Length: 212
Image (cartoon, rainbow, N blue to C red):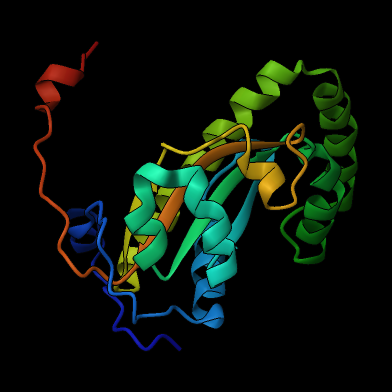
């Protein structure tokens, strides 16, 4: 159970989320709660429910020291946050389809014959899909789960900052992942704010939306 009071109102969660760069370094999110937050985050949608997101939770002093030179313009978030989540998209996501669909059958969410038809259809489709299109797909899905994680963290009483400024060509290999397979999406620092994030203005919907 979280030691932090959960925020239950969805609009409060959305409206109170800020990008926070200064954290209370004394606050550490337990592995149990971080696991719960990730479990809630992966309820996000993905193409054909392939769930191509992969996470590296960078929380130990040694791991943070390894990350620091790769995210040197975001060093404060790395050093003071409870953890930094490195989010990747797995180009080999199709390898997990049988496991995912099989679990859906066990849980009664999908008939066996439907699973077999979908596996036959989608396996051949993804096998022939150019890597550029696979990359586009996993980037979208991993971005969805990243946004969900940030909202989940806010609901748990924590703060986050999505980080795009880091050495994307080095991050996978630095943490033991295959860089040919794992596409870096973003880093997300998470912890308890020491300084509140700034409020920011948004373009009016009339400026960004067309009605047809």
